[in-house]
Every structure is written in structure tokens, then in C-alpha cells.
Image (cartoon, rainbow, N blue to C red; front, side, top):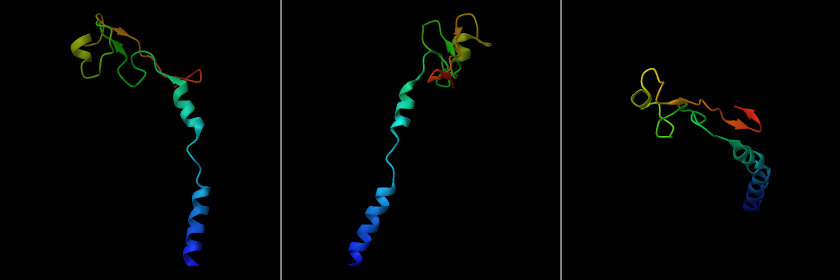
Amino acid sequence: MRAFIAVSLALVSLSLLSPPSVSQAIAQDSCRCKGCGCKGGPGWRGPDGFCVSQAKLAEVCGSPAGTPCKQEAASRVCFGKQS
């Protein structure tokens, strides 16, 4: 009888847990990241057409960053709002 009660309580407590929200998964998919800097990088595009990392910014773009690179500083857009 004790085992039955223990199993019953365990099942009741598990039924109270909610599954992960679908809206959270949709929110991540609805955000778009386009351009250098939207994922947290320095926001500069190098002369080769790729985003430049913080570690190579001075080496590729100079110090201060400039002429051979283009600053984009793109921001992440979620549901039409910048974040």
C-alpha cells in the first residue's frame, strides 16, 4: 500500500511540471542576426568580406580600426524590435 501511495504521489507531482514552452522556441527562431556585430563581436567587416574578431581587429583593420574595413555594428532583431 505504501508503494502505491508513493508512486501515486510521484505521478501527481510529475503531472504538475509543465513542458518547455513552445513560445520560447519560436522566439529564438523569430530573431535574426544579420551582419557583423549582432552576435557580440566588434562589428567590423574585413577586406576579405568576413567579420573580424576582436582578437584580430587591430591586425586586420588597423588601430584605430578604419580604412580597409567597414563598420557594420549590426544589432539583433527580434519580432521587429532591435535587441
